[in-house]
Length: 614
Ligand SMILES: Cc1ncc(COP(=O)(O)O)c(C=O)c1O
Image (cartoon, rainbow, N blue to C red; front, side, top):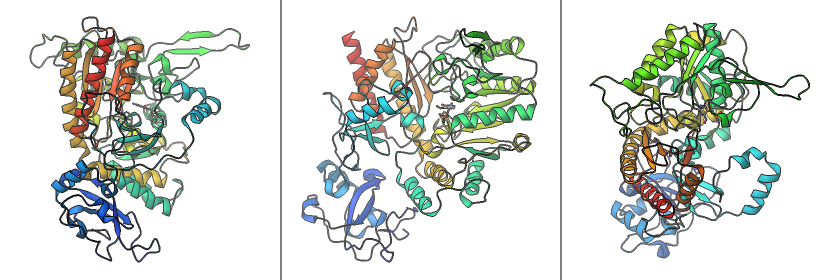
């Protein structure tokens, strides 16, 4: 290992200065946390400090002072001199013994309040002690000095006051630990404050915080090249933005400039952002304001006439096509989805046929025939209709739908845009497990891909990736963006791509996600109010209903009760769907099977609690 406490074939970041650098002088290394690899191949982080050996020594361990001259940093436990005799078994034992001084606080207070549940899986990280303002004061400021919108979107009756995060864990200001299965709305892709990504950011922060794309600087070019290498031809040209909405705004602009057409089609129930343009793509009343927005792709335009006394509402032709939702929509069966779990609906289709797909494609043809001119600019779709809206949240289309839809769109001169913002704005970056990008699961190549959310593991960033021809039409005018391609953002996003690979995040998504969905389907069969379990990899939706026969959405109060209970037992999940009827599970792609089991026990218990009370 380069300059670290041991030697390893894996390149690991060095977090602290080498001994010859100016920095703290030190005599001993103190292990501050067991960070990577878990008990079978533990990695340690060490920093200068004296170790109270007698106190920290687990029974049976042979310990001695570290070899002088070793630099602090990261290293595999097996190669660190003083801990050479530390076998995986001994580490496991240490975990059990709660040797906090030695390996970090391994069994901190969990948020768990319910008896009869398994222990929350251990965590080897010690958060800082919270010394900030009181919860009451924060809420006062939130009410008085923050736009009321953030009060409106605050999750939970008893909100979570988050202090710190590490990988799949969050700590509140009282030191309670939560298993985070929502990842800041599907955004923390590889783990909160992932050590490698944090180290990369720290390095860049010391070098250059900001410059813009009017200058030439390595992080922008290194990242654009790297990101492009993850795409098939001809998707090779990148433009970096600050958010998913901005990426979608630009994609709309490029599509119109390139095709010379104006109309853009989206799915009913979709979410593509909150900017005035993307608000037109977004199809959910809750996210719409009565103003002119997204002309050419919206259903409603409200005009305030000259004196502002009367509000005149104009209805424009509907450019949103029916979402092919095989659970809640009019058509759907038990073989439609590319998912380990199918709907509870029956299917009488012959092998190789999908009646639901034919019907939903028929609806799209109907939209072409009635609602748009013969030539269109674009079709916008999320590979899995995920986020806030999505008629049900995490809606999956019939297997061949996108392929046929893309053909119809291209016949009408339109470009096909995959909004992966819900995974790079939510379905990209390995989250679906089987593929790196959500569109690959549909066997299509879009003309443009937009992304945000997980691209920077939570650092604000977005991107539009397209073909050289489409990109060229954008360059007909001049567009400038101060922060898009910021060097810190580029370095972070680059490290996220490397980390996804190095940590095997896509495989984790596939393995843990498939396991979670299969086990959740068993809960669906157990409880009348769990109507549907769907998704791919770690992009999971659990749609709640009053009963399976009616498929009427479970009312908001009932959803809140279960949601709050899950949180009080130590797990954070999300909510979505047009009627708020779907629980959303989109954890950082570092969760383990043990975490999955813990969540399954918590979810089972909370649904059971609700059923017993009603
Ligand atoms: C699919 C999709 N598109 C676009 C957006 C908008 O991204 P942002 O909030 O970064 O503007 C989101 C955000 O949730 C999303 O999920």
